[in-house]
Length: 332
Image: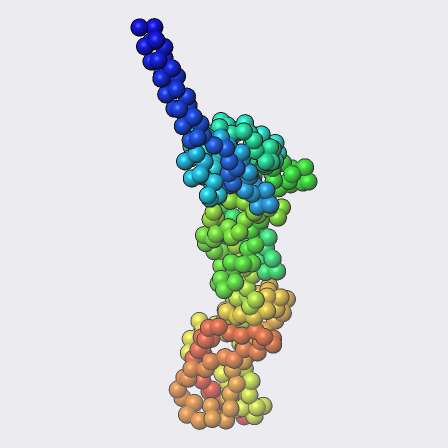
C-alpha cells in the first residue's frame, strides 16, 4: 500500500513539473516600441504638449505571455496616458510609473524598464480674460471717429502666454483695423455695420474671442462736402445800350432776386461759401435777342460762377422777367 501511495505521489509531482515547465515556456520577455500621447484626464481647457519626434517611440521592456508580447512587438504600439488636472507649467513625467498605472493599455504585461525613464511635458490651460477693443482708424479721415459695440470681448488664451503678456505689458487689448472695412462705404453719413474680428491677436499672440463680431460705427469725411449757400444775390449783365433803352421788370414784386443754392466741392471751399467768407453771385445775361418781342415775360435761369472744384448739384430756380422799353419824358 505504501509503495502504491508513493508511486502516485511521484506521478503527481512529475505531472506538476511538466505543467510548470510548459507554463514557463509560454512566458517571455521582449522590448516594445511605444508611441506615447498625453491627454487631459477629463479636464476642460487643459492642454499638454506633444512629445518631440526625436524621443519617439519609447522603448519598453516587458514580461508576459509569449502570445501577447509577440503580438505587440511586431508594431509600434500607440498608448494614450491621461494626466490629471495640473497648473500651467513644465513637468517631468516618470514613464515607468505612468505605464505601470496604465498597464491595461499594454495587455497587462509586466513592465520592467522604460527608455527614456523620464520625459518633460508642457502643461497649459485656456483662460478667459475680458479685454477692451482698440479701434485703429488707419489713414481714413472721419467726421465721426470709428467706435465698436461691444467695446470689450472675452479672450480665450493659453495661460502661459497670458502670464508672459502681463509681465511685458500693462495695457492689453484686441485691435480692430477700421480701414479694412470702411473702403467703399458712403461718405458723409453715420453708418453702423456688423464686422468680424479677423485673426484677433493680443500683443501679437493669436487668440479666440467671443463674440467674434462687433458693430462698427463711423462717419467718413466727404472728399467733396455738400452744403447750402443761402441768399445768393442775382445780378444782371447786358451791353450798355440795352440798359440805356430798356428796364428790367419782374412778373411780381414778390419775385426774389436772391437764391439758395446747393453746392458740392472741396470741404474748405464749401465751408467758406456757406459761411459767407467767400462770396458768390448769380448772373442773368441779356442779349439783343431779348429786346425782341418784349411784351411777354420770359423765364431766365441764373448762372453761378463758383470757385474751381465747386459745382452746383441742383438746377437753379428760373426767374420770370422781361425787358420793357424806357418811356421818354416829355420835353419841357
